[in-house]
Length: 87
Length: 87
Image 1 (tube, rainbow over the protein chains, first blue to last red):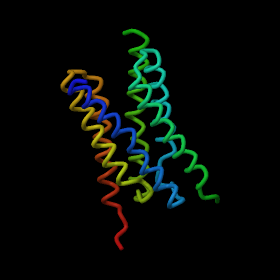
Image 2 (tube, helix red, strand yellow):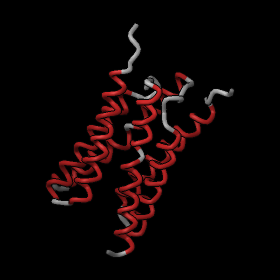
Image 3 (cartoon, each protein chain N blue to C red):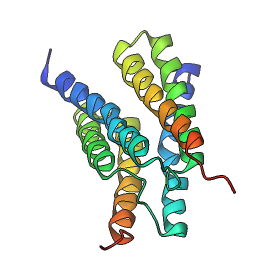
């Protein structure tokens, strides 16, 4: 594997695992009111398009990175809905 | 421009602009306690590596998408630090 591919791989790993601490934080604090719902929806729509893009190109790093990130954000959205304050 | 490129472009636009509502939400509510600091640092490190990756490859869509997303997340981090609760 050449250096540029290793760089891309590290970049993909970092942007993917970054949502793990966000997930754990919400799970522990049982609060996600400061996390924007519109951000989650827009971000997940974009990740979904990246996933389709990767599938069409047959590019497994794009499929894997965006698939896992989409999964994490699904859980974050689910936690946000679960812990929302009822009026 | 072919369809697959248009798809990638839409994906990049969505994942980039998604951080705008998050920025505005924190700016309006003056609270970002539920946004994970570790997520921001890890995500921004990953975006920075993507940026270097794009610069080495001379790939302007990667440079543009990750550069703008990095800028938005810098502002989110700055707002989080600015509005943190002091003990």
